[in-house]
Amino acid sequence: DPVGILERQQARESAARTYARTLPIVPVRAQGSVIHGADGRTYLDCLSGAGTLALGHNHPDVVRAITDTLASGAPLHTLDLATPEKDAFTEELRGCLPSGLGDDVKLHFCGPSGADAVEAAIKLAQTATGNHTILAFTGGYHGMTAGALAVTGNVAVKSPLPPGGSVVRLPFPHPYRCPFGVGSGPTRTAGPDGVELSLRYIERLLDDPLGGVTSPAGLIVEAVQGEGGVVPAPDHWLRAIREITRRRGIPLILDEVQTGVGRTGRLWATQHSGIAPDILVMSKAIGGGLPMAVIAYRAELDGWAPGAHTGTFRGNQLAMVAGTATLRRVRADRLDEQAGRLGARLLAGLVDIAREYSQVGDVRGRGLMLGAEIVDPSGPADTVGARPADPRLAAAVRSECLRRGLIVELGGRHSAVVRLLPPLTITPDQVERALSILADAIGAAVR
Ligand code: PMP
Image 1: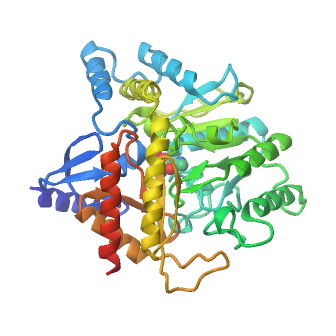
Image 2 (image 1 turned 45 degrees about the vertical axis):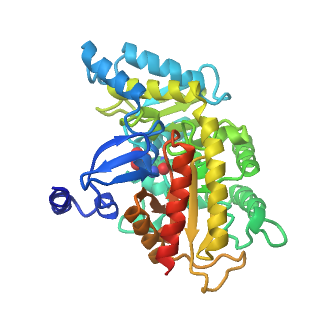
Image 3 (image 1 turned 90 degrees about the horizontal axis):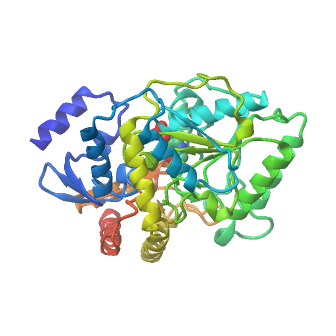
């Protein structure tokens, strides 16, 4: 009784849980990029557990790794002790980390959400520098725990709470919603672009004795902002951020919770720009669909005491084996490159849709992390030609997608960006289907 299950959960669960309401389906089975609902319908999953399922649902490698481990009599949870399963995972992970973290790179298992790994990264940077203030960006999203929320930009999720931590927010060079109103890349008008102004602002602020941040503890950034509306950081901007932080001795924390494990067309999104962070934050796909969060960092930062960031559910055994199986398959089949190719096709399809519908104000992304910003074309254009966000229409597009069997989520300013985050194993046929459903859904929603 799918309706009964839905209604019971909505009645029993806290209103703070939104997914049950925004995706009113009851999934009962799933394979690859397809979810079967209790209503007998099938859905093409372009959300993949918020990006956790790099190999899609129930990939045979992951299923085998988990069932073999359970059947082997290995302990299920070991409080992060050394085990053969953990040994295999750390070996695999070390083998694929971006070069530049050093041969003696340190790993720390967190527990086990992305937000907790962000907490760990912040505490590590503060411990290593003896400083307190963290630099973070407009549009950034890093999680819902108090410290992670403090570095998150979204005031809608922060405002009911007292401010946590000492954070200074810096302008992210969004090409369509540029904090300076000048744009960058294709939307640039004249004069200096958003990238240049963002860098200039950051340097001046850090030099300003009245700016309050001459000695920050660290700077946290996403290589592609996900929840913030799928906004890729320009490679040359990221390289400049690396150069500024290195020159000033500020640990650079790169949050690859959503972008990691092949999502953007490279194993790590940082590899597009060629930079290496001082602390790399990983979660989501790293555990093959099971809860896992890890930070990797330069050995010279490793000055914190044993137990400085601990928790019961770190380093779960099943997440280790699911994560190892996922990393191996992604690397063996070069699923990162496949994500790049399929993502390019998906982006080209989104460009076509945007040509047809003026309600699609901007499309952007990298690899299989894409977004289409839904706007009101009759609203006033700002200085870069961006129209006002249309959250009501975006929600209608999501509903029309779901009605046609396509699962997508919303993000970005005013929740007006339709986000596509399919498994890396999505097939070319499924990509075409997603595009045609999305075009139909937008057509229906604007009518
Ligand atoms: N950082 C980024 C970039 C994320 O996208 C997310 C989750 N969407 C988080 C951190 C927080 O991860 P979690 O929800 O597992 O706490």
